[in-house]
Each structure stands twice: as C-alpha cells, then as structure tokens.
Length: 80
Image (cartoon, rainbow, N blue to C red):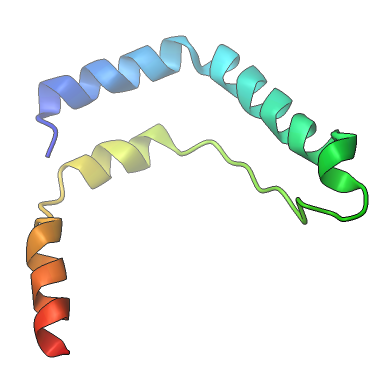
C-alpha cells in the first residue's frame, strides 16, 4: 500500500505531465489501430480501448486496505 504522502506526490507528478501522457496514449492507440501489419489480413488487433484514470479515484483507491495477493492465491489453491 502506498502511504498518503507518496500518493500525493504521484498524483502531482501525473497532473503535471498529463498532457504528455495523453499524447502518448493517443499515439499508442493510433499505432495499433492503423498499422498495416496489425490491421490487415490476418488481423492481429481486433480492437483497441484506452482511457485516462480519474486521479481522485486513484487517491481513494490507495487508501483502501487490500488483502495481500498471496493470501488470495493460497485460499484459491486450497479449494482444489
């Protein structure tokens, strides 16, 4: 889990670079949507989805305590 100070620093960094991140996201989407090797027969890429996460949502999500993945995997593997 990320502490509050670190999360705020991450969010500030993302906000300050949001334009560049969005341009990179747009370019990446266009690459996969238009590259002939990926879109012509046989079609390798069927569709592309893209979004920018809401930073407020990330802040809220970081404060939620989550169960470590190892416990989840252990519980699942003990079922079978």
